[in-house]
Length: 284
Image (cartoon, one colour):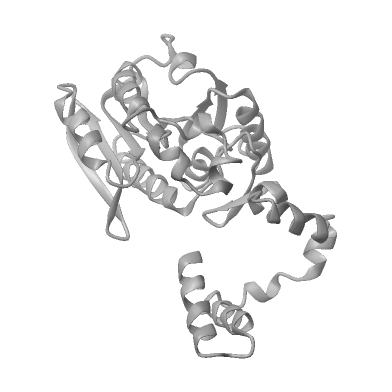
């Protein structure tokens, strides 16, 4: 949406409209069925937002989501701090893909258990829990601070019965008989930025978002290797592994899956013509 906003604003500005920003906002308000017009100054006052302070922090490069302490994802607001990545709409494809698998399998699996690996603020786990029936979501993160933020979001949406949080390195919290071979789906939005590319990222990302959740080693696939191998310990036969990838990583990551003799039916999913999600099924 933001790219389209900038593009339309530039067109109004090029045509020398007196107020191109107002024209763009009015157009987007129509496109959103009037929802933009519902955001008024009382919103800022009721939430005790100091506009002067907000502008100064934004001038320093702090992302708006960290200033506000909240981020939007799939129509909901989630608590968000510098201990967690800011959710992006690209990840909606991962959630939708997982939900499709859950729906298809409900015919023969009434109750399903899903692990969200590296949950961050919990937006993936919570969105899946909100939009599926009879699904238990286990969400984990290496960062205790991120788990604390995720728990606030679980409480915000009253999903304590559907979403359970764990702290540990990847599958460490699930190395017990309770979970071994018992999980239907593993979803993951791992770090996938190659170390050499971090310095090229926008300052508001690299200077403020947690490096632990960004840096994925020389080729951007360090975590993929571990997740592909370790998921086999918890997945049921015919269980599904599903994760988000970075732009142009489909060949590298797809090769890792296709070379692993324990997986089959590797599938690729596109967002606006670009492959952003890959899934595979554990052989039964």
